[in-house]
Image 1 (spheres, helix red, strand yellow):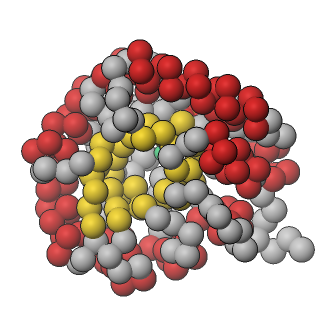
Image 2 (image 1 turned 180 degrees about the horizontal axis):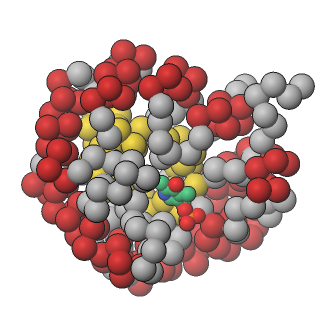
Length: 227
Ligand SMILES: *Cc1c(COP(=O)(O)O)cnc(C)c1O
């Protein structure tokens, strides 16, 4: 169960953490994966700048028929055959990491705003384009008519927040070199390091909504063929 007042209080804590890390005008995304539409509403009411979703089917089920949604960002791995499913709901695609996905987006949702996902440590599990391929991918996205607003990255899962610093620094340097605006990096556990390294957008889930549990997924997101 989402407690909207608690989300507001937690959001104030997150904003304070961002400010103490030196962040100014940092876009704050509420990551609502595994939570229901009540989390999306609570995020919007609390003043999140957008919500982020990871799973195509979950997103489409959750948002079908909903109106007055906040800005929606897709932040999970995206299969090309799922683009059509999510396109009606998504405002920004943050995980473009290959030409085939860029081509599918250009076809299904021409002129869409995208970020190129970068994997500074070339971890195949997380997705993302290796540093030395980013410039070419940005160019091909632009050539396809997509609007590349910036770059996105996910810090390593091991090693604590400091382990993310070198990768964050490299991604920010690339954002600057390519003359882009958006640098999407930092989550609940590493947002200070991300902001210190120049993040313009943090993606925060558990620090706003609490820990994600399998129960939350089962209770709140009916499988596509339920009902
Ligand atoms: C789940 C997720 C987040 C939020 O993670 P928390 O640790 O809950 O803040 C941010 N970014 C991406 C890409 C995610 O998959």
